[in-house]
Length: 201
Image 1: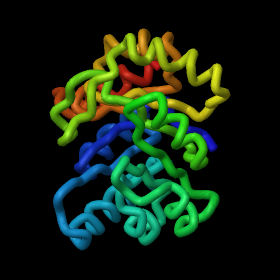
Image 2: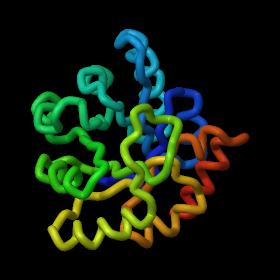
Image 3: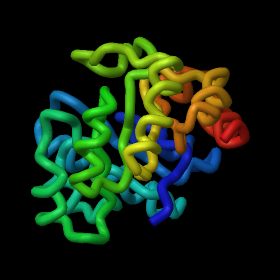
């Protein structure tokens, strides 16, 4: 299974389309605090867009909606359903990712056979409520050799306030890829910003 090095996180199908036009092949739909029925409509629209561009669609938190629209995967936060339970519902071919904030989180998620881990936050980000303690570049530099020593080989995606100038250092530290929201969404041209990030990766 190919895990993309650039994961674009959005709440908006149109933004997903603009990112796909720039070459994004992995869209995570993360919409909070709305009813399931409303989310289902947004998820179906985003799925249609991703299918047109042959991009993977990952649904944040909502396992049953991911199943219903036949998304490619689900991303589970620390308070969401266990990856083991999600795997029982979704089957072996579904991509399941998890959120980690510490070295121990990563080790524990690795034991639950997730396909990738979003490790962060790298720096402060306003797109996430109840933010965990920041890891910072030094945190990643410390963690990756330690994970190697423990034979943890799952792809680690750095997340949380990442800008284009951070990419080189995060990859050098050992990150497999990055997840980005604001640094693409809050630009004049989402398509061009996506292209820029893909070049850096």
